[in-house]
Length: 364
Image (cartoon, rainbow, N blue to C red):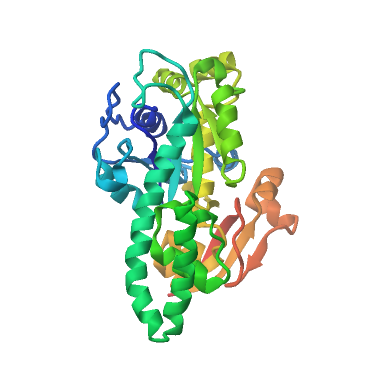
């Protein structure tokens, strides 16, 4: 599962990517600096794993990760192949969620591709290009579906009805994610269409350091614009985040954050938000050899969660021994949790909860 960072050229995408991944994607003051999409495997900050490490004292610790993709800046006309349009759209199609970076700071030394700072216009530029590409996809698909629907094929008729609704929505300059599926068949069809504007999105307002806590007039404009989109808006001073990553010690970074009025880097907030946007959650295994966070989809059953460790665990699943993270933290050890009667034995139907500490019994 990958989240792609998108935006116009020069809004801070590659600098943000560097902060998130510590991979050194090239970052420069001109458009199309990032041509090949850079992929960073990013640790998901989680204070729970530090608590488990403190209690269990394992030999090693492994955090959950999420893949972040830095994609070339998009310009007007991308849907028709302008700039790196086709490549950009291909790269974004392969991502499962979108992190849309908007420039919300004034700085005469950093050129804006459209001449001045206007996050509303910038957002609309990206939205329109993505919607135009989706419209092209929908119309191509309709050509084929219309022929089948005319023969009386019920499946084709249902698909045509949904495609017509999506087409109308896109023609109104709205994203396909605003089309609400009426039943499970429509949910499945929407997934199959692989439209770019159905992907979940979060907005990152890249602000100056002074606006990192409370935002500014540009952030207010973005919030007002997206209030009906059911999308999260995150404020981040990408320049300050880059400075923080350059500092050697944890203490120096904390002093820098305190001076800015922050309790943690904005990049940590963003990574957790991206993880949630991808509908991912974490369960833990905790033993003296290793404390580890495992990534699963929200709604996964215990056997599915076991399969993330090894396919044999899923195939031969017998049961899961489960401790809620809060219980593990409060009682301080697995033995004490058992004494208190808080360890549960769950079967194949159990839906794993975020933060469960699990041990699997299996037989192959």
